[in-house]
Image (cartoon, rainbow, N blue to C red; front, top):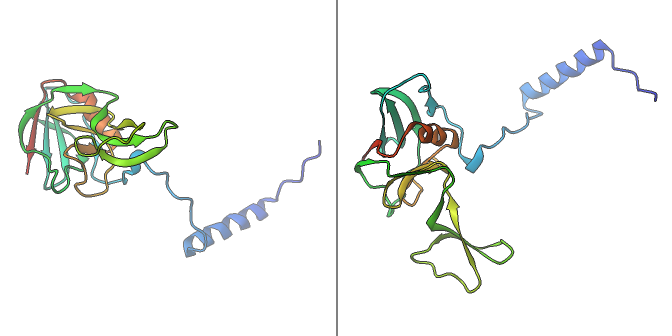
Length: 194
């Protein structure tokens, strides 16, 4: 097999220089960054530094800041951006405890109606208000790393548009929901502040 000759070192340097010049002048754009799961924006707020900490966990959720704080033994272990309940479906405030944890959870209230082929017939379904069309199949919204706080309200991985947008739950970036999920237990105190 005959291989074409390799470009000379000077040709490679010239091509690299030209590409750098085009990138710096905006003539060529670098490839877009991969989008995180659920379309959540990357942020410079969420962080985790709790693997080395010990002690009993506790969670404080600030609705006004749209942040969740996890403490271990009174020391801050992590901070997460959140998206809480939108207007008319606001997240409840008060002092609670984690009631249930489920790694793979689907909502029994909110989701979509699908046809027999799995195609979406209706999105953003509220099963308490939206009657199921004949022959439709209900598929609950995916809520990974589910941590039930009270009633149908919990923390879980989900879409964060940058403002309160949920049906009352506390959505978190997937990596932060995972840290919180692994750090809390049933009975962990959760304080939700206005």
